[in-house]
Length: 497
Image (cartoon, helix red, strand yellow):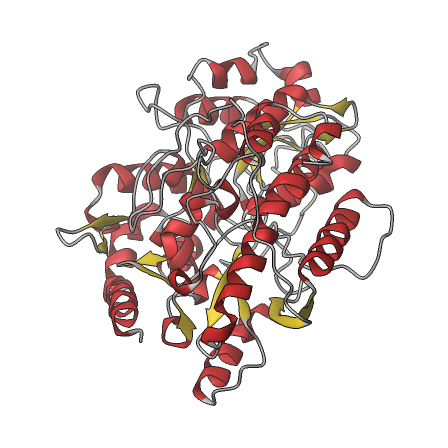
């Protein structure tokens, strides 16, 4: 690519550069598993040998054809980067990269890219209303993942589009495969935007605190040696707590082992997913069923995590609402916690910290776990409207393929580069860790499609009780709701025209 060689990046960028010169007839060895109904637990190590020929996108004059997208208002989906268009060049690298991508593609293919923004929680209603009234105002609807399963009757199978190759790395196959419901591609999670990449789960640590109060352990070496485990993480988090002001009360002036971040749900889901503990199980027909209440290992881990968050000094007291934010959001930024859970969208905002930080992948269950697993949820996927004309399929396929390809090659490297810049400069070790994260992303039904329902269901009950005693009963009380949601999802996919 014309710009990628100018960017100093780590192994991940080399992998991207390899994929961005691949031929359609001989694709690069990607970093994600091929598309299946049930996503794989981990992703294989990347192949860094660049193919000999350049990937060629189709040529076509679209004669001023319009691609209309209903995107999420960033003020309402503030926890992800859903940028598609920008107004103008402003000197900021990501902004200018999006502007240049769109300008180059609209000129190359002679089409118009139109974007309308709406509150994310209203987009599914707009989709259904327009589909029922045969209103073709929008071609693409950018939906929060939790709204996908109720929107199936109003979307078109992406498999109808020519040109796009969902096994290519720019389509984020291990994410996009989640939306393959019995062979029907109800949505995609490719790199047309940063909606998925911005939600990759990581552990961030305060380097200065660890240098002053730690035992000298190199966290990066723990990861490299396969010894970055939940036991090690929780042991360190508990050991670092200190009543700094000596008032014998745990308040915002003290030092905590970890800080949840936005809310507790990521704490429970992320550590479960990272430990390889599924909350759903595929039956003999390959369809998933919600089975958390029967998964003893997962329940034991959740019990441990729930009980631990009540331990003094483990984490700063979170808000009284199960889905709200903390009363002291800058606990980590102000140097009052060793660890926090963050995604790249949040990490970029840490660059103003006066203390240095580092990035780590999610810890493994134990050393016997073969690979790290990095959960990714809370982003947005792209749904193709049921009202799209078949005459537009080719144009849609070409443009979506081109957008995903160009973003993966030119914008993703810039995004990663920004995420690993700290007060001390670029952190090569953290770049290596982020490479691991992006090579081991995990999407699943519970964490992505059911998270909204669980957040207001059993998770809220356990959070408000602040006790693991009601864990199983709260899950089983909501079991029929999750069962029906999944059953309806498969049925809706089968009923699609």
